[in-house]
Image (cartoon, rainbow, N blue to C red; front, side):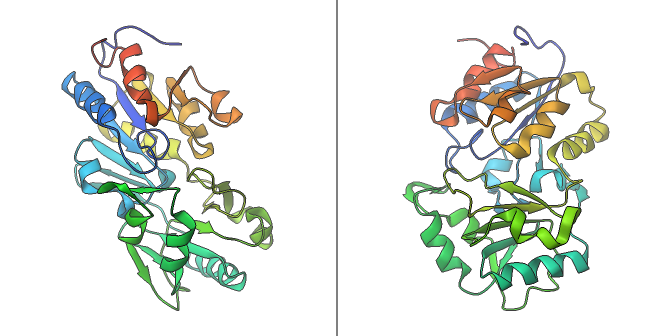
Length: 283
């Protein structure tokens, strides 16, 4: 485990849900830790499974850039460095299968998230209690998601980079069985959603790919990369990083690749992590 002073400029990549944010809300201590790390000369980036359209400007304003869509979209200083999307024919097949099984789903793109008519009502009921609104932490519900939502009864030609699905009557692997290895499946990153929810993605797209795009663009030494995460879609980025930090209670596969484990965002674990790694002054 690495501790002590981070003398060189570090590039820190933070997962959002369950790492930087607690049920969609960023704790004040985390904001302060990021500000202190940046003031010390380090660069801090979001590295989230969320699409750009579901990240509030107030969150992005505190960061040096971000990797969204689990590595599929990268933006630094207003410049788009990557925007990977499903091929049109594969995307149409995925949409047809989701519609066939009456799954509640969102097709995620940087400009918006797209869903079938009525998915807003389904998600409002499904996600109440699992998420709080970033603009009003005392209110429960998926307001950050629904604010970016555009609904249509024909999504067959929609361009998207990733899919989040809910209320599926069959497991994700069975749902997309006929597509073989063309599409990957992960459990939902939203806490406590169970087997009926998950994410569909292009298997060659992952967070480490997005991080590599950032460090190559900025000329950052790989030895100065720190990553923090809690979900299965964080494994590749934790393996890529020189220093990997996991959140307590993460999946064993996440903990297995971590150099350090810290408390979750409800305990402002990043404050602990940043201090231990010498990114901010110790208390």
